[in-house]
Image (cartoon, rainbow, N blue to C red; front, side):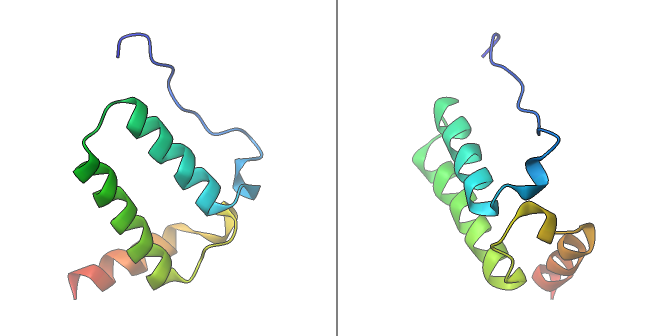
Length: 76
């Protein structure tokens, strides 16, 4: 993994659909040779978050407070 390029968000990435960005994340993790169980874990976490937040639009729909609310929810 020495020569792997670091992922960075582009200036207009806030308009990218959440699902598209997640799919890129999964692709990157798959290329890192993560186990199928790890990939499934990421997918499950994504699905739980989307179900909770009801925010499957663009990235700018998700705020810091969205994450705080989700963290509070999973601790309940």
